Figure 1 (spheres, protein in one colour):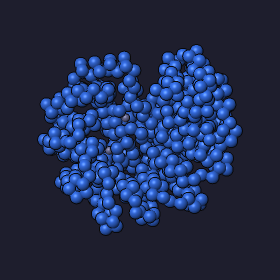
Figure 2 (spheres, protein in one colour):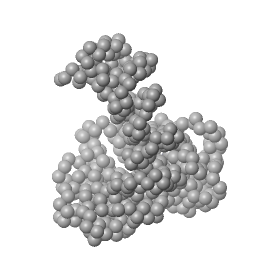
Figure 3 (cartoon, helix red, strand yellow):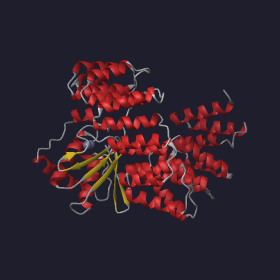
Length: 503
Ligand SMILES: [Zn+2]
Ligand SMILES: [Zn+2]
């Protein structure tokens, strides 16, 4: 191993053991060996000092680097290892920032799912009179897409037009994707028709957008246009088209495309294609076909595949095949404790579930944090699960409690903790009432006029309890409520959801 790599590893170990003495020694060696200008090593040194509660030394380290090129690389290294906050501190201390600096930090925030902060920085960039380029917009457009914030999306798109940003296929695809994810498939289609779409990525964005909106037939029409316009589909195109079929229960059509992909386009199916096929069969209750698909796979099935099979077994009450899937998930030792625990719960094996939960506690495994966003006017409000720090929390809780009370009179029964574990991706300890989409919903009801549409975006998959509640709320308030989760759009209206309770 080279000196540089050795030093890097020592720092990494110091960071986890908070050993500040060794950091100082390593720092000295870095200087002696002449690595003091290596950006990735510097980034590591800065973050190690910061983690060892010595921010003043971290500051000293980066105040010595005056070279802008190096500073940009230091920031890049920091955001790559997920250290956005430290990167931001370095960024703030920089005497001069060029467009690359801004792009690095904005892109870094987007990659670390800190979309609101990314948008805030983008506004800062505009105030600082640094001209954004195509790279900046690619990040910002992605951020708006993930937030599902239509007004902000329109504003960003408007800026692109105003600044005459030249659209390459990456930006075109990002725009098509952005409007689809913001719930405006109509605008998404319009953009698609206007931009040059000779690259497969732009088509993929359109097909995937239609798929998440549950518009399988439209996705198929777009797919057949590809042939007319001489664009060859790739493996991503087929994931999109298969997902569209799966969301709409089009088993035979899906099978047709799965075969076409291999026979006509010579694209070898990958895990994602198999997963969607298993899902497609499973939802339709064709458990035998789903299992045969797994057996015929040319690659080792992963947890996602077994999970798809298992969830179908649960819906259709196939206990034996379900247990078999569980056995395979355990065999894979994926470390996916959450999934495993959920699986035990789904077959009411409380003993197994409890054991896994203990393992999780000991291993310090945490579930992902649920986040939801709602855009009112052009302001985006973020809600984190179980986070009660919002300034208007009291009013939000009052509205939420009122909604739950009324829903209960209409037959809504909150799921118990154990059942919840079975369906939720979120932290178990969180109180069910404070799931982020419920908070966002209550805030939407509080802040918008009666009868208007409420649109919410969520970073994870919506849980069954929230789904049940929102269905009933859409009926009692007689309002259309749209929730976009990680999987698809849910359009709640009159007590029903467009997903038909399959998601
Ligand atoms: Zn929920
Ligand atoms: Zn739904």
